[in-house]
Every structure is written in structure tokens, then in C-alpha cells.
Image (tube, rainbow, N blue to C red; front, side, top):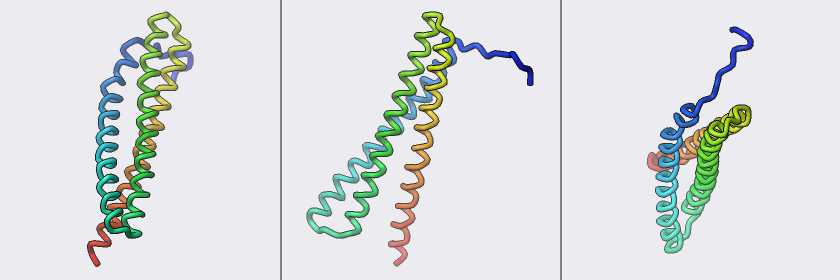
Length: 135
């Protein structure tokens, strides 16, 4: 690998993330809406017939909703930083644009890491549900 080779950030580089981040935010919002509806349904059931299983499920869903909220915050922050890096490039502030774009990538990675965490929680909950079905 050659030393001294620098990669120049151009306006198109941050712009490439726009569709990916937009689709992620849409997917996160859909997950959030499905979970919110499920919480409402389980809460109504729990009010009619309180039981520990429903309580545990609602607690699990609340944890997942909190994670999704943080995923959305990080995704929007990443999007914002992409736009800011483009603005810095427009203003010919290359070094600041590079730093801001790096921040955008870090926020995007953190958002994706939370997505993995939420998926594992979701899979675990489904496996518990499937075990209940066996009995």
C-alpha cells in the first residue's frame, strides 16, 4: 500500500449514502409502527386479563422500541452529517468535510449495530413464543 495517497471527498460521496439512509429510516419507522401497534394490542389484552406472560412481552417490546428510537436518532444524525459534509465541501472546507463525513459513517455504523441488537432480541422473543407453542 502506498503512503501519502489521499482520497479526496467529493460532493457525490456523501450523496451516495442518501438512498441507503433513507431506506434504513423507512425500515426503522415500519418496525416502530408494527411494534407500537402490537404494544397497544397486548396492553388492551393485559387490561382485560392481566398475566405475567403479557407483561413480559410488553416489557420486551418496550425495550425494542427504545432501541429503534435510538436507531432512528443515529440514522437521522448520520443523514444530517452527510448533508453538513456536503455543505462544507461546497464552502471548500475539505478537512472539516472529511471529519463530518467520518462522523456520519460512525453514526450509521452505530445505528446498524443497534439494528443487530434489536434483531437478536426479536429472534429470542420469537423462539420463546415457539417454545410455548410446542407445549
